[in-house]
Amino acid sequence: MASNRFSQFSSFPQRLSHSWQHSNSMLCVGLDPDIARMPEGYGTSPAEIERFCMEIIKATAEFASSFKPQIAYFAANRAEAALENILAYANEIAPHATTILDAKRGDIGATAKQYAIEAFERYQADSVTLSPYMGSDSVQPYHAYPDRGLFLLCRTSNPGGNDLQFLNTEKSEPLYQTVARLATSTWNPHQQVGLVVGATYPEEIKTVRGIVGDAPLLVPGIGAQGGDLLNTVKNGLCTQGWGLLINSSRAILYASSKADFASAAALEARNTRDAIQAAKAAAVSG
Ligand SMILES: O=C(O)c1cc(=O)[nH]c(=O)n1[C@@H]1O[C@H](COP(=O)(O)O)[C@@H](O)[C@H]1O
Image (cartoon, rainbow, N blue to C red; front, side, top):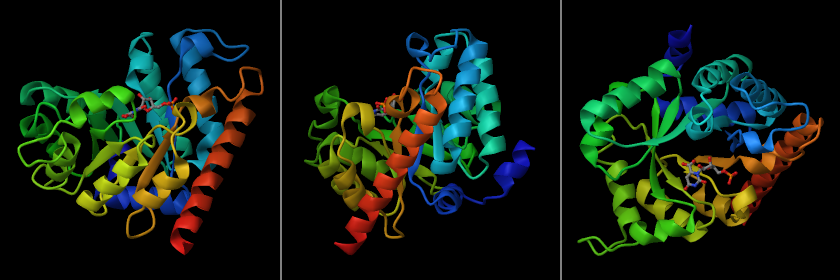
């Protein structure tokens, strides 16, 4: 079953291209189920987390090209089995959509091999987020899955990202630029690597796009973090007019805390998809 799904696409860029074109969308719906913010009528057990996420996926599938569950929200609540079910559900009802397991893993090779098994065999995710901090051998075990995607943290959306990502390297460039360069060249034998760049820093999106060619960019930070959608799209499009997975989590998940949460999430997802499309049209024409 799962192997058929993966064998449909010979490479991760092909998988992503299908997702963008089939949905005509670059919206990534983030699944960050906070048990303190469950909607009316929902409890906080793993079964309820699963039910909530499935309702969100069903309501937003039409507007999304990808789904990104954040593993901490599941692990913190002993809901890993729910996460497995949710990813399987996304594959079933939105087979066009690329899944990203947001785990931000990074460790020595032997341990990274186990994390790769977790992401790609246990959870059957199409892609995973990784920290580049431990270097090339911490990324290398993921190359055993050449059709899956790897998104390496580059210029993150949070203010504290400056602390390390802007340190000058011996090449006299900020560290995030060195990450972008390495990640998409010597660390990328199967063209499966993309970068994480926050929508809160659109100038850096432009810089990273200039370094990485058409590699995909996972861009969190619109919605709850107040990122700049217009300039994100303008600066981040690839030469084919796609190239971005623009994530919004809380703004969609918690659009309403009432019984109408699913329709409110759908409306927010649709409006965000439309705003991304409008920004793309403006960027292409202007
Ligand atoms: O890797 C990520 O997804 C990520 C990187 C980053 O730089 N900033 C960032 O916010 N994220 C994640 O993106 C999501 C943002 O959620 P909202 O701010 O609610 O849209 C969360 O799951 C974060 O963990």
